[in-house]
Image (cartoon, rainbow, N blue to C red; front, side, top):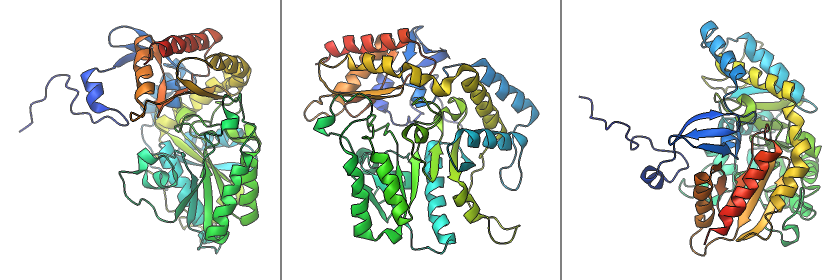
Amino acid sequence: MNKPVKPNSLEAYWMPFTANRQFKAEPRIFVGAQGMYYKTADGRDVLDGVSGLWCCAAGHNRPEIAKAVSDQLTELDYSPAFQMGHYKAFELADRLANLAPGDLNHVFFTNSGSESVETALKMAIAYHRIRGEGQRVRLIGREKGYHGVNLGGMSVGGMVANRKMFGALVTGVDHIRHTHGLEANLFSKGEPEHGAELADDLQRLCDLHDPSTIAAVIVEPVAGSAGVLIPPKGYLKRLREICDKHGILLIFDEVITGFGRLGTPFAAQYFDVEPDIVTTAKAITNGVIPMGAVFAQKKVYETFMQGPPNAIEFLHGYTFSAIPAACAASLATLDIFEREGLMTRAAGLAEYWQDAIHSLKGSRHVIDIRNLGLIGAVELQGVEGQPTKRAFEAFLKCYERGLLIRTTGDTIALCPPLIAGETHLDFMIETLRDVLKTID
């Protein structure tokens, strides 16, 4: 017998990364979206200050993407990813590889950032084993890093709250120190001047564990979920040098920074550092359909291409890898990016955005501001004994005033769609300025 269901009940849905009891007592429901705005159930427009969840870079409800997906569903709804293919998957891989720097010219499709990270970690360990260095199984992440919610990603991640409920996680993982909290870098505009030497913490772990046991180091070029932590000048180059010295693969997690967020296709190009593997997702389809992609250097791909020609080289993949509708959505998204110059638009807005967000210096409770490209963070002084309270209050009040922001700990993160204009940025900053005046 079917259980009776209360009409429009909110109870059945266990919401992710949400205070379920608070939400269900005072629900915030979106019913539509267009361009820079969401439409709420009570008929209000809310400016999207965080690109959905860092993913709707081209704005909302783009008809080109909807048509591409609709057309694809009526032509080829599903194609097996194992031992079969369809043309759009190969076309998309070619276009993505052409955007990537250097030898990052092979693409493995996933369905999310978390899956991209798991794929990259497995790829790195398998790469060394094929090369005859099977002892390289250790993985190095970074404190305050966020690499999704699967076991491997949480293990290399360094956000304590995300890890503490789940036990020992994957063994053989260590972490270098984070770059947050250097007093000399407070209110830095763009890349901070101080802290490149923190990359040398990787050498410390090499000395501790023996570098010949380390498979890969994974970092976000700009740490997003930890509160928009901008790497100090020279920091990423130093990580690259240490990895090269010891034969360690360097993985950039670009799930947030990929596809124009810093004014270049990837952060690797912005910082002029080429990693061995890059993980992406989110903006790859403008958030319309789940999809991710892992970019691998030619040397990584070719290492796997050994043995009998009918043998499966990499025993890994997903049922929904490169499904036709997702590929169609991504191709249409790339068309929009190219036609509207969105891959580089953040570079043109960066200075205006920097001046705007740093104008909040001196506002109530603000203890630091960070920015790069079209991304930024306003860090608030926390309430003693009640972490996250102040930022969450700001989140609720901004929503009521027509602005969607993102909070992580006591930091407000901002990441507007790349179609944003100066008036949208002004509204974001002025709304936040007014809200901060009202918070205890």
